[in-house]
Amino acid sequence: MKKPDVEEGPSYGKGTGTPEEDSSSTDDSIVVVSSREPPEPEPIPSKIPCNVRSTTVKLLMAVCILGGVAVILSIAFLGTATPVDFFATKQDPPGVEAAEKWGTDGNNGLDLEILNALEDRWTPYFEEYVQLWGEGTPDSLTLSTRRVQVDPECSPSFGRLKVCNGNYGLQQDWKGINLSLKQDDFIVWSVSKMNDSYLDTSSEDEKKYTMCHEMGHGFGLAHTDENYSNRNRGDCMDYTLRPAGNLVPGQFNHDVLAKLYGTTTRRLLYTELFQDELAQAIDRMEDSQSCDDAHCTEDLGGGFQLVAHKLKVAK
Image (cartoon, rainbow, N blue to C red):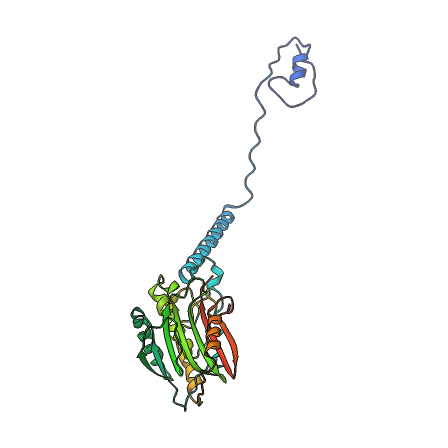
């Protein structure tokens, strides 16, 4: 028997119509309807070529590696995981104009006596840095030392640098401090203090660095850099979190000392009439609330100024 004509449509089996049309046909012939689903469409191939994907992966890996190296270098050299600090520009160091001066009697440099009022455990550091500062080139310092009674109060001595240590407290914001009294812009005495409250638990390098640093202020030198996080300058007047790289006076500071004391001539005059006022001024300088900066100056009248340089605790 001839099958009835039907409209062409998608094939679902051996029938020629839709399942509904096939099942409702009045044709006596048997129509078999397939239960098989239409075939899944073929996946569309990726439009990104393999070589492009490979290059992208390599670039991402390179960025990760470089970032890791930067962090490692930063931690190794700075003690911080902030990579940008490693590439920070070193500050331009101050010159002679930022320094304080002792008076001298000619053009033969500075002849200075340094009093050792330290506990015995500090004496090796003291002697090491008297030698290092005194043997610089050009040779501008003629240094002599004298052992005196241990003096945590560090009572000043006219015309001399005195070096002391003591437990000055963790409430202070300094590991070391130098105080200098100036009259008419010239130093008349200077004291350098090591704060054992911090330094007792510090490394050997930190102790050496602090001694070198505060002794340098005693000669009149300023900080060469006050950024803890940038690269070391290689001299102990530079703030650092890595003291092992800043354990010597450095050529720059020897050059400044030569400019300071090569031709300076000054006759010193000093009065002890205002010792009570001076003691109160020293307390203010040591107090972080009164002197919060690394460098403070207080005018005492009569041409006298008290100058403080602090090696501040990094925060």
